[in-house]
Image 1 (tube, rainbow, N blue to C red):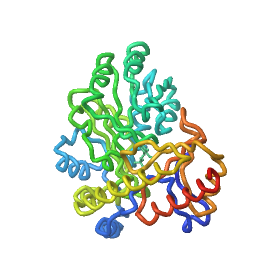
Image 2 (cartoon, helix red, strand yellow; image 1 turned 90 degrees about the horizontal axis):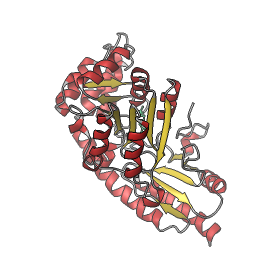
Image 3 (tube, rainbow, N blue to C red; image 1 turned 30 degrees about the horizontal axis):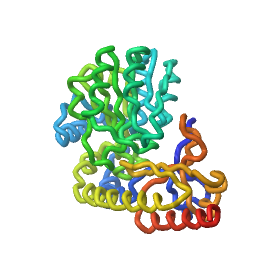
Image 4 (cartoon, helix red, strand yellow; image 1 turned 90 degrees about the vertical axis):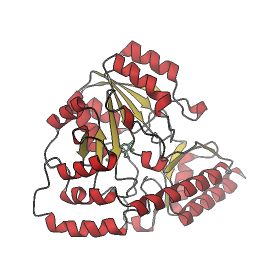
Length: 351
Ligand SMILES: Cc1ncc(COP(=O)(O)O)c(C=O)c1O
């Protein structure tokens, strides 16, 4: 299995876990109440494909039901897509979420990775990307937007010529918008009907439901039809299906979360930027990537852990290394705590 964030030691209740990218405001009290009500239904099989929840999403987003597929978290749909499309070659815009490589390699696809430009805030090297698309002719291109762990966001207008290049070679573009709710920026939604796009969204992060597992994908009739042929029945549990219609309509929670993320992301980014040992990359989601430019990274990690702070090391992301760390945005007091702790370490080690 790949490495992921999350602290699982016995003392996990005492640890401030900055390694997981989950909205600390969630789930809302009203959603928790719906979960409790839903326990009444666990003696029945859930709907095979979650049609009622798909209908609720369809009404909410004004997207046809046949263009929506639900997943037990976005992760189910990544593996389903890899299995159903079974491409010979895949091009991943990295460094990025490591499950893409695993899902495609498991299905014997050849995976090629093109690196974002670190010197330009991990932006995409478009010239190189277009060349590679026409040279290698991959069946699938993967873009995470905003990207995990670098945080970079690309606008659909700037990226659309790449989607068209993939269409030209009869390929698919997977756009993973699992963190888009935090970015609150323009999405690729409008392209799903006329381009070969698979748009993927997680509901576990923004809504604070990683234990419930909920995600969905959007695509044209043909693509969603193929994915449904390969999907196992009953992969979404009845609690997840029952709460979905309430989760997406929880206006107060969504408004409070957007206010929190905008304020706290700015605060954390600006304060981290003041610390001389760090090079900080501009965030767009609910996490921030930084590079430790001075000091020993292992000692830095252990120092934070000794202060009950757990951060995500990034040595397993192809193209990054042990000097990179990702931290999530949390509530203000916790954000202040990590800043004070890193500042102290910076003073002790860098003077
Ligand atoms: C880019 C990306 N896509 C998908 C997922 C999986 O999300 P879920 O919890 O909905 O399965 C993650 C989890 O970290 C992720 O970072």
